[in-house]
Length: 95
Image 1 (tube, one colour):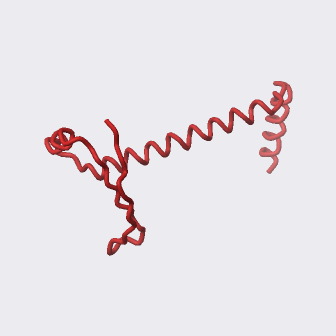
Image 2 (cartoon, helix red, strand yellow):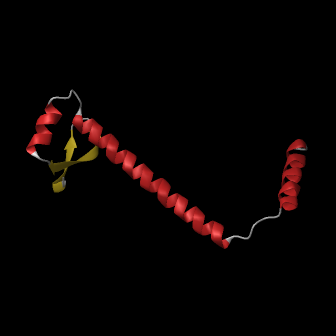
């Protein structure tokens, strides 16, 4: 099954200060008939799926960047980490 975005139009809705885009998707007729059999707000469902996909990609990109940074950074010895923690605790205790 292929999905094709046919057009994208920006429009303003009264009372909604945020512009919205109208997206038309072509699907097989059989799928459309099956969608009618289910009591679902398809616009809301698709908006949620798009947001979820965007968030997944954002997290994937962030993870990739972190992995790149990890390859460039030298490991910190355990005794150094312990020293930093002790210094921080002492600083907080005397604040």
